[in-house]
Every structure is written in C-alpha cells, then in structure tokens.
Image (cartoon, rainbow, N blue to C red):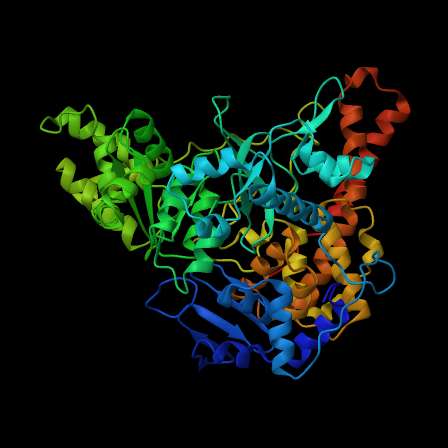
Length: 634
C-alpha cells in the first residue's frame, strides 16, 4: 500500500513488542545479569559480545558495533527494508499497518529522512535505465555488450543493470524539466549544469550500474562506455546521500544472496563483482574509484571476520595493495583477518573466472597471502636481510605499521614476528617501540597582557569523559576516530545525548530553548531529542532510535547508545545538568573571547582608557563563567 507509516504507530509498535522475544526467536539468548547475551549473528566470534537490554529495548555488539532497536535487528538479520520490518513486527501482534500521505513536519507529523525526495528520484532514474535496457530502440548495442561479457538476463536483473541511451537529455526529459526537478537531479549527480548554464544528462551511451546502500536504496550510479570515449568508467559525484569513501558496490547484493557471510572479496570493478556473482561467488564487492578506506574496512568487518583484497599483479596493483594495507591496520582487532591476492598480470577476476572457472579463482583466494606476510614482505623490498643494516632498516620500516594495530594478541604476535626476522630480542625491540620521554615543559609565562593568549583552550575546552581511569583514555583535546571506544564522548553534545539515551527521563532537567544559539548538526539533534522527550516522556532508547532511523543522526544515536559501559553508575542527573549548563554558556563565552581577542590584536599602548579598563573586566567575566559552568564531575 502506498503512503508513509505514521511515526506514532511505529512508536506504539516498539512499545508493545519485546526485543528479547524478537531476537530470541532468531538467535538463542542467555540471561546475563540484567541483560541477555549471545554470540553476534553479524560477525564471527567465539566469546559472546552481543548484548540485548530489555529495559532500553536495544541491542548492541561490542565486537562489531552493530546496534539498534527491534526493527533495526530485523532489517539487518533478515536483510529486509524498513517497511517490511514494520509489517513483520506488526503481523506478529495481529496489527494492520496504517498508511498516510506524506505531509510536512508540522504538529505531530513523523520525522523522515531529509533526503527522502532524493532517494525517490534516484529510484526513478534506476527504473528509467532498467526500462531502457529492455525497451529503448538503442538497447541492442548494450545487450550485445553484456552478452559478449558472458552476462545473463538473470544476473542483469539481480544487479539492476540498465543503459543510458545516446543523447544529451533523455533522462532529463523523463524526469521533467521543471526547476525543482532539475535542481534535485543536479544535487543527485545524474544531471550536470555546465559553466554556460546548459543542463544535460551525466550518463550517456553507457551501461549503467546502480549503486545501493546497505538498505538497498539506490544512492548513485556508475557508467561504462559502449564505445571508445573517455573516461571508460564514470561514477556519480559526491552527493548528500553518496560518499564514495564509505560505500561498496555489491555489498547489498552480497548480503541479500548469503544468509550468513563468512568472507568478502574486494575487487577493482563492477564487472568483476557481477562476473563472480554469476559464477556463484556471491560475496565480492568493489570500491568506487577510491582506495579501500578505513571506513570501508570497518563496514566490511561489521559483516564478516575476513576480507580478501584482490589486485592485479603489476606495479599499480602492488601500490594499491600497500594503500589497502595501511588502511586495514587500525581495523585489525583480534579475530579479524585480511589477506592479499595478486593475479597474473593482464588478468582480472572477470577474465579469470570465465577462462579457468570459479574453482580456480577460489583456490587462489584460499592461498592468498595473509596480512602479516604481506606487511613484512612489502617492507623488506630492496633490503638485504642477511646484513645488520638490512634488518635494522626492516625494523625502522615495520615498527610504525605495527604500532597502528589495535592493542591485543595479534599486535603482540606481530612484534614477536618482527623480532624473529631481525634477530633482536623482543625486550630490545619493545624499547624501540617506546617513544623517548618528552622534555620538561617550560615555566608558564607571566599572565600579563603581552604573554596571555585568550585564544588558548581553558580546562573547560578539554573533553570530559564519562568514565575516568581507563588506560585507553585519550589525551585532552585529542580527536578520536569514530571506531575508538571513547570517541562517542569527544564532545559535550554527544555526552548529553549518550546520557539521554541511557536515561531518557533526565530530559526534564533541560530546556531545549537554552540551546537555541547552538547551530551544529549534533546540537540540533540534541534539541530535537529534548523536544520529543517532552512530548513523549515514556520513550525508550529503542523508540528514540526509531525516530531517526535511516539517517546519519540515527547511526550516531546507535553508536552512542551502545557505549553504556562508559556511563557512570551514579550521578547521571547532576552530570547531565552540568553539561547542559556548560553548553548554554558556550555562546556567551565565545563572545567574550572574541572581544578579548579584538583588544589583544592591538598594541597595548594604543588602547583607550575605556579599553584598558574593559580588558580585566572581560578576563574576570571569563573566569567567573568557567567557574560557574565548570566541567561535569564523573
């Protein structure tokens, strides 16, 4: 049935279902304290790290980072979209899912992705390209090309292949040339406006490959020429819904084709992914014109414990492999494995599997080089390891790479392996690992006008962690990657959101209007959560996640909700109130600092008497403000 599912129905549905029952019917749970645990269904593990919290109606895996409410679990576990997950949950309760026409966000209208219209447009484009491959008069050239590459109609259907016919504005005419549609098509990257103002289709006379996100939504396209034009392959540009450093072509199709994935093979092109899938190897993905990034690797390792990188055996392939190695190292937590496969020069997975068959390719992947072997081999290139100088150089090259590995057994084994290759005692090698102590800091300068730096961070600018004393605690003002266990608390706003997700009732302690001067994305999210909890104070963590499902904000909420181990056991209300006070004072603090900086930018002797009198007043006001809105105490 057409129409949107009302958010109020989704809230009530999540309030009526028990996430423990939903998950236990699919993954056997065991009671562990107040929560339930199991081995994660989304990645391989020997020790259970998958936890279900019945109070919050939320699940989280501390191994791979998967987390969400009952709807999110169904979507990931059964590989279905959001409406189908709602239908499944409602059907279990004997409820009929209501639908309503899309309305603006007035009154109690449900929240939806701000990019919904763009997703809809991309689906219209994909449908147009698919229909053109079946019906357009110019289709024969594209069909002949695909048949010549050995592809069947079934595999073309499974991957949604299409064709962009010759001509400058076929798609544009299909979509409509009104200003709003043209603007949206340009934003989605399917239409281009040149410097002279001319608007035309980006993809012309090309095979078109739709690129889907993990939910199966079309977010971009790739195009392969049918003639000799350049470039041979053309991808959509970055858009609000497409970030090439994050997405992987074929990942959605791989998850759809495999009930449980064991490994993923990263290849270089669309046709490699499709040819392998047609040969029965349905777990290959490709990056989209970029090197394999750390974000790609985190996404892969959330799904499988093993990744095999497949490269050409030439110099370019080796260089690409080294880039992949560097990006893979920070993701290599214990239990994860990466291997490197180099094909014969001139071969690619597509040509190899057609010529030698799928088993020959699988044999090569089985024999692929483990990460540890490739690391040492690549760093030993050009070195004479039978000499002391060569072994010393190997240590110098390999140590910075090993340092990038996460703490754990694998990292320690890598140190031992380096010690064996260099002939050094492990203790001696570890001394090289420890950086020399920092020189003692100079005495602070006198706090007079010339020496004082009002732009320097005060103690209140340093992140205040929700739990202290951890060996993993970062240094003040250190910017952490998103996959760091403490990264969710790198800002005060995220601290406040995390506390709200842990205990929604504390929203009563804050006034959303006090944060009206904060204009960051996360501050806006915090205000919206506070406003929602004022309207629905009974909301659980799972219900909050449902309101932002499918958005970037929803991903952040899921990550923050999963960090409950870092939430203090006591004093949550006081800590939340302190954080809100600090946040509400930040605009005033910034205005004071700006005024101080404006005064300090001029020589002291050029200041007027009023300015000289004003400066100590501003400094005192800043100190008083910092004292009143000091850091929250854990």
